[in-house]
Length: 123
Image (tube, rainbow, N blue to C red; front, top):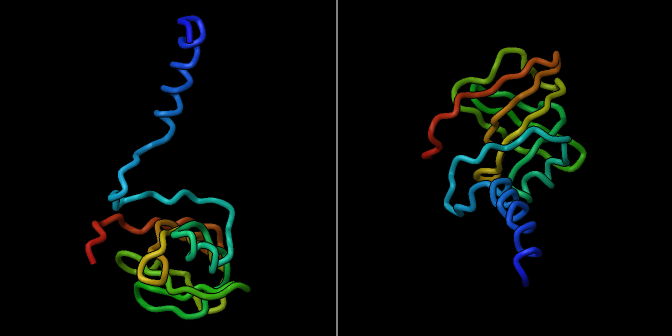
């Protein structure tokens, strides 16, 4: 390659490097971006994402969310926000962990957004 064809590629390569983000395979605290909801089964298979369904069961710091493809337990750091009731519609963004989801965002039926605390995930 001569100099005139190499130089235009450098800015594009640099931009691609900046946009690629961290390539650390051991990165533990990935932020899952809210996106269009996907089936529960797909989110569990791919390691995380956003699900939208109904609440099948509720505990202090967990709930079970179900849609037509399946159901999953969803855990949060601390307590669930008020307003979550069995049968209510809900949208959750999180990452797959131990067969369920660790929630990073919860959108309640009234449209309010809850973001659980982001403690270290050592358990």
